[in-house]
Length: 321
Image 1: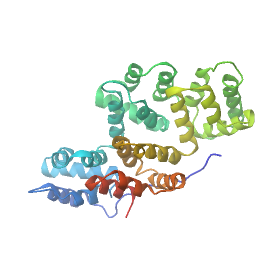
Image 2: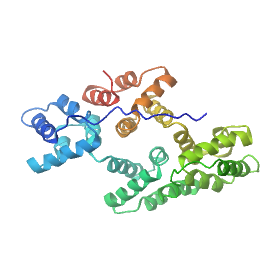
Image 3: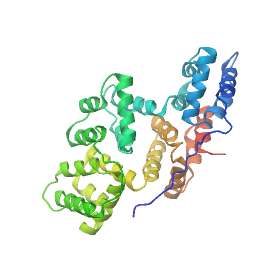
Image 4: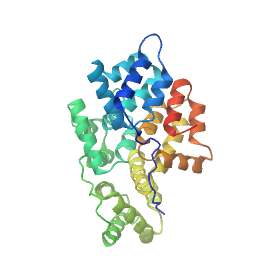
């Protein structure tokens, strides 16, 4: 059953807030001999991205300096990655992650799926606009050169903004689409991926939620079970990501965080990206879901995987003690 959730952020606007006071304090933390990392953590993890932009603006106007460049020159390693991710405008940060996923040898399909399959049409449009501004290249074109087949078609549909806006749910239409999915998959030999692509990329998230409910009535199985039988590879991963984000985003991101911390080594890039990008949305819910699924707190796992200022910054964002 799809779960309705009220998003709980772990980072909220600081009140009272003074960009000037914070800018002066950050400058003091980086001036002279040594750096006061704790002061940087205390300020930047407890302000929203919009407040951080105001601090960066003050920094430029007051000191003629670029806050991000100053931070980069004072910090290092994954700690620097977290702090810079906090200060970059959020949509630019996600574009940088997408660009990194498609640069160099091979493509990091998991990152493409995580970012693009979890977003509303409005968020996708912001990403598409920012990507072209930052890289002077359309995101759709870059995706087409790095992916192939039905997976490429699905991602291209998503970034071209074909998804309907959420303006209510039509139960009759949901039943009709559920029957189309059933006919394109379980009812035929082979699978008509195009039908799955079209419905999963075009319908709004609330409408998809209703379609998935209807699918159970039509076929007697969940949409996840059907997809796992009918689809494979990256296309399956992308479609399951859409299903999970339609039904309960915190579950999707809790599983991603678990993956980032499981096994040998830590997938730091994924860990940072999810904690930073969800902190003002629903990291509170993701924490609860993580504990429910894995019977461990997210804070305890992150503390076990990280160290030093890097650990302190992430724990501060998670809302740990």
